[in-house]
Image (cartoon, rainbow, N blue to C red):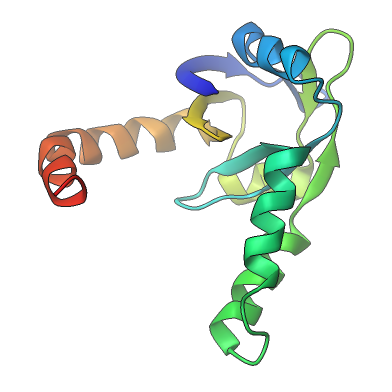
Length: 144
């Protein structure tokens, strides 16, 4: 569904252009609404409405009597915002989420199958430098 990595910059109004390949997927799947929230590893997650509803359902099924589930759901959902692209294919990044991901200007937009991740360029570079050497080891452990 969403694949690849693309470097972009946010404009003065806090908007970023979503890659054309991703916008094509939105068009093909008749996506009108997106959801943006805090992700893991200090990035942001962007979901189509359909995928957001699946994630929401999974997370709502966690027991609210467990402190860890309450804490995660609070952080995850309190940072969420409904989003739409403007006619130029730009997405407005709320200040709260930009601050969370430490996105100042340059960012990398990454397709990760069912979601899109938005990373501060420096954080993505650091992640890749630390993760790349262990790629094959991780594959061996996960694909057993």
